[in-house]
Image (tube, rainbow, N blue to C red; front, side):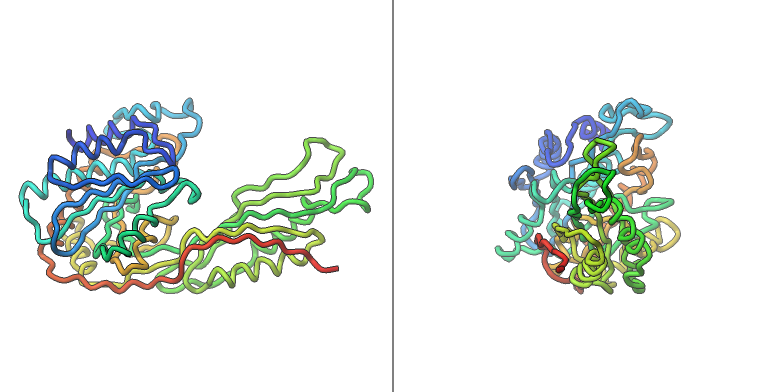
Length: 400
């Protein structure tokens, strides 16, 4: 089927993380006739598809995902989020831009490329996960990557198809990402009647000054490759439901997106120092989602820039912003990682969409990348990374 037909078929599958829902069957049906060897690897509640073409030369891997975030209120969509309708030249649906549209385009690019180059001088891999958007407890693609490393199978060049472009397809090229450190904070006060404030410790009142101070901190200044570290609160929950009861607990979810100028240890230390000023005791469940990584400028990236310049009339802007991506799992093994996809404005929103002309432009750029790899005899990786992902829980209590 065509790239558009495949994209529509994928969008019609309600593949909320961590379930694939049948997307892999459609993709396998497209790749198997081309000669790809396909494996399906289960991991906890998710699954990874690994398709390989060729058995010698450098490994070029396209990395993507078939899972999507929930649609939100379906009645607020112009078109049903899982019907994949085309309205005014735009394909609308959950996953159109992030990233079923890109997956379909890359598969079509492979078809076109192999029709002209049936025996390329490098290997082509396609690696797709059903849990890029979801929680690590459901399984992540890094388990497969670690297994491949133990078998001395390494990916030389990794192209991540995440929505990364800004005003036009290919105007932004991402070669790194900030790290992500999340926390679940539980402030523990003392519950009681609102009429007796001397007998209670309100975690709601205590959290106010804490948030104010956290909001004022400059965690670092960033550097030439990365924006400064930022802190955000995503959820606060407290209360008993009664107007005359001071609650004894407050739960807060928060996240740091941190540059290499900070470490998880330094951020934790400063965060705890602020909490220790409170009358409450507290517990924190920390989750290191990703370390910052950066693929330094290499010969391949230089050639890709020239190719994008030829197509777009300008070089792509190097940008390492946005959220995390699965490219973080490849960087520690020395892969050269770059991200190129559709425009990012509509991802995760109501009426998520991709313009049909964007798909055509993206297909042209993906095929050009494959053609560029054919002409390249050597690719040297110089990837800067730091550490492994860890999870820990500690309870801190203020000493009296």
